[in-house]
Amino acid sequence: MKKLILTGILAVAGLTATANAQIQKGNWMVGSSIVASNFGLNTGGGYNISLQPKAAYFIQDNVAVGGYVDLGFNKVTNGSPTNFVYKVGALGRYYVSPGEKGVDNLLHHGRWFFEGNLGVGGTSTEGSNSTTGLDFGAGPGYSYFITPNIGVEGLVKYNGVAGFGSEGLTSTLTFNVGFSIYLPTSKGKQIINDVK
Image (cartoon, rainbow, N blue to C red; front, side, top):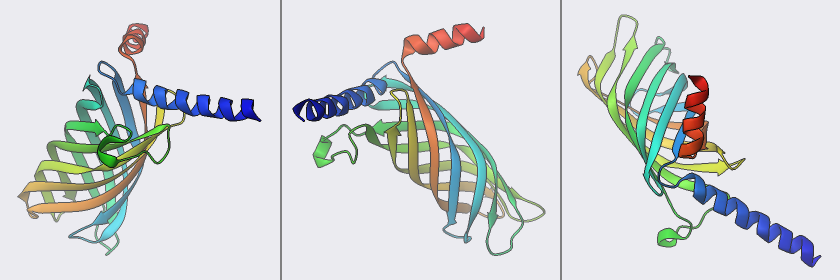
């Protein structure tokens, strides 16, 4: 029984150490959201089908900066036509350390994070409302490491586009589920060299 308990403690400690190692300075994070629910704050709720790839480089432990692209379609439940959504810009993530400022991890092999983005984006609807301009968003998320290098992520985020067009501001609250792959710099270089 003591061996079983000791083995369990060592496994949890190993997973925690692995999660910490993946978000260290010099590593890469690449991923995408695969499911997104859209709750319109000024236009009603609906669905959102999009491809949202992102990549970021850890400039220091727990802090990553990079870019994102978002191409997709959404439909508002009030019978409006389908919208085409496009966005591109920069993003930043901050991962909360276990026990930092009284915040403790829900699970020992995952990490809470805060993500923010700023870029250019817009929404285009057939023959009617459109908005193009400054794309921005922010919200909390959680990355659960199913392997040492792969995290399944949930992210709740406020998104807005402010600019020109028939609508000055489009804002939504989204819930995204996706994944990220965390690569040490040496592993990233190896993959790039293999592709060449």
